[in-house]
Image (tube, rainbow, N blue to C red; front, side, top):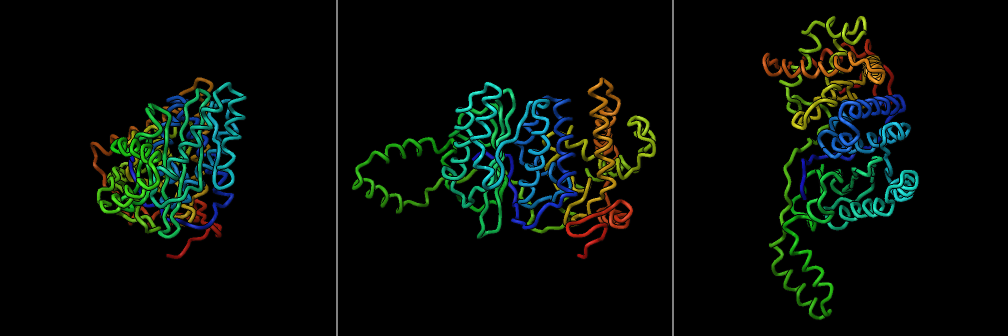
Length: 409
């Protein structure tokens, strides 16, 4: 199993309230549109096939930064937002959780009829990646979500997730058609999940000979097959090891200091609070734009313009808009709405050829990089959290089941 990273995704119960779900849809759609404007629709598929970028996206959208629910909520938000602009974006999200995953073939067939793409090939691809992660890779996780993101060019990415109810953990699998050589030999662009030890992985390159032997085995006389099985049992310690590089997401719900790259967070805070806010306000044509909104926009900017190495600490992105359960702090709705307004305005201006605002948002990211490189600021984690909580009511802080109230530890 070729992995770009794996993490522990605790199974969390609960729902995403409408006040957050609608904002997640809007923010996710704007980020996708910005990616398309800057890099093209293929880049959206590439980003979605990166497990750590996906986790960071969910965190910057205000969802819990590490729970299994981030997969369902982010993909639901993107499906609502992207599909409403399918013709404009050239992208469409199929499938979903539970019964919605089983509708994927019908949705793909409809899209194929509308676009002229090979529907049978797309449907076979969808079924095959689901079959591989549920049968060819037997790791103890039962699939319950399958999303197939398709472009009008015929490129696609699959994001699907399985759960292990006994261990109360989830594993998210990412697939991509980009540069994909084979569905049955190291096909994954990444797998997110807790390492549960040795697993059966018939997709590994090293398992090529094993796959050939399985075909031979299937044609054996039953008596001969039983003899072979007895031989395998005697040598069961020769199982193939799983191969992947790991990024383990902690089980604790709250964001802790060790979960965040404090130098990178410090660069974000320095950009927002130590730079001259008037410079960015004039560029963004937003009089009175405050440093707290710049903090959020800087993290949003990194999600859009950052390189893969920037997403190794997804918890940092929760300092944009908090989390629905109050970790690291309640979702500041006033700041969230201001971030949406500025980002939407920059995209609308870009459509008309005016790039000042989009360039200013990109500059937030480049300024933070310069701060990080030359100023080496170190974020005071506790002081940062204290400031967020102290201003939570002022910024419209909200958590699940409560309105503008703080939660107790």
